[in-house]
Length: 296
Image 1 (tube, rainbow, N blue to C red):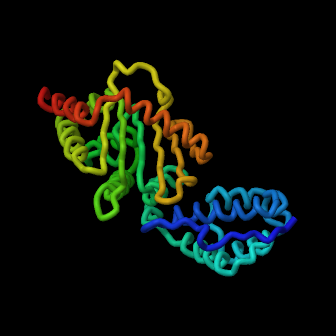
Image 2 (tube, rainbow, N blue to C red):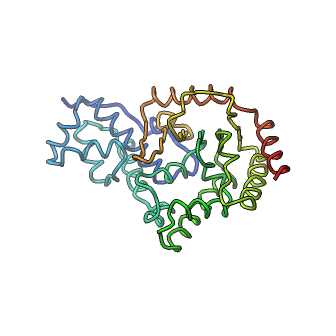
Image 3 (cartoon, rainbow, N blue to C red):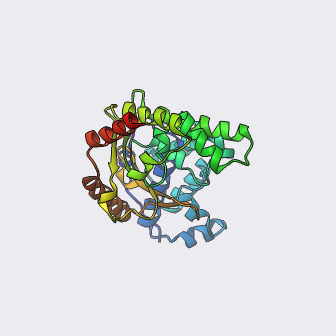
């Protein structure tokens, strides 16, 4: 079953300033490709090493970190002979086990690792039908949301949620800022979260942030009618130089879901871009927000 694969270090896509989440996902994709090239099933690999049946699946889905020793054993099993490629993957495994800044906030994060993926992404396409995207929220708006949805939580926990969200917002500035394209339902900008004073400050923040060259904000008017994203929030995260690792994140009360199949990710991208043609232009959107502010 073993075959001598011809993968080389040049096969490893590179990205600028990538963090442990993206490294883990790149490593997972490389290991999966090596396994498939060698003709092994996930079950056969698990039996070979007497691992739990789900371990290989979790490694290839980047759900668990993998040790350099495991990488070495897997590549030996798969017949990967190129020493430079093997060394590159084992180095990737070591780097992927580093802690990201967000791990300090695990106690107030939703299950999964959306924040880690967002931290490594080069761009994000976001649809929000209920509240503003976290990256665009003002602190008073955040506190109003947490005070309502998590009113029984200790104040310290909500303070940490605010701190986490404000730290995430740093991705919109700096030398390599995240490119954000956000489409929000008209009800989102009209809904009075926290009262008139909070919303006035939030509207001013939206107008200010929308002026940044890396931020596109559109409002989908009520008149747009039905569309493909009526089911809930959608975030499409795209990564530099590794498009096959782009991921769609769907958030819901019943749980979160990640779609990573390239064909499905492409479908969501097409639907998002189609939705953008039915939304107000960025100029019309900020104009609507300014009128709301003027009429307050």
